[in-house]
Amino acid sequence: MLFSRHTNGIRIKTARELDLMRTAGRIVAEVHAKMSEMVQPGVSTADLDAAAEAIIRGYDAIPAFVNYPNARQGGPVFPATLCTSINEELVHGIPSQQRVLAEGDIISIDVGVIYNGYVGDSGWTYPVGQVSAEAQRLLETTEGSLWAGIAQAKSNNRFVDVSRAVQEYVEERGFAVVREYTSHGVGSKMHEEPQILNFVPTDRRDAARSYPAMNRRLVSGMTFALEPMVNAGVWETRIHDDEWTVSTKDGSLSAHFEHTIAITNGEPEILTTL
Image 1 (cartoon, rainbow, N blue to C red):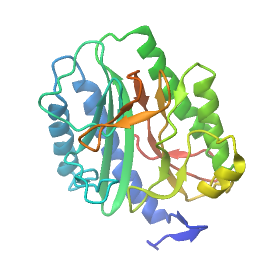
Image 2: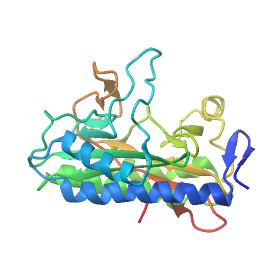
Image 3: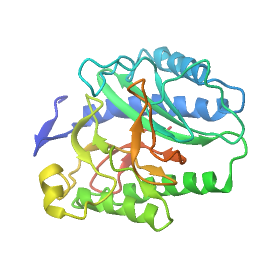
């Protein structure tokens, strides 16, 4: 059986769908393995993008971000294979031959792959050479918050347990969780229900209205992309004139780590890994 069923609007994947997502996820992981080798001073983000596209197309897969529609109706579609976001940029940076990595930068590389109609999605933030102590601590905190959230992604827990784990891990270390962008369901589409906050709103009634999935229980077969975005300064962001690149409002550093995971009857399964 290929076709999934739904529970409260959230798709429950079949064994066949999960197999396809595993393959998509392995291609994503292979791209990240290549990126980890290539990220160094003097490399342009266009060079990274070309290498990623070659790997993806070599598997007869499709770069999921190319021509992805803009949030603004009529806005420009995304033009590249990767999102490459440097320093104060947190997500959706557009690769360019003019953007050349320098010693001390940090770069978030987000990779999406469609394989036989199913998506793998993972982002990772890499240091470029030697980075500052603050940057290193930001990277460690953001990655740690991803693992804290994954640890709570178990059957019968609730989505809010995942959100709370991410937020507490970040704020206990003095950083800020971005609130304007969320984790999300993923499967045959890049963005499926539900939206998953990386924080817990203080007004639970407002949360229940705006994010009705927060108090729902996790069920085996759900798949989602957990992606905390963490800022060294304030949590607020701004969008550049290109209508894609998102930066911190105060110019502080930002990091982004993401895995696609599947809920099982035991520990969650990470799909975007080799």
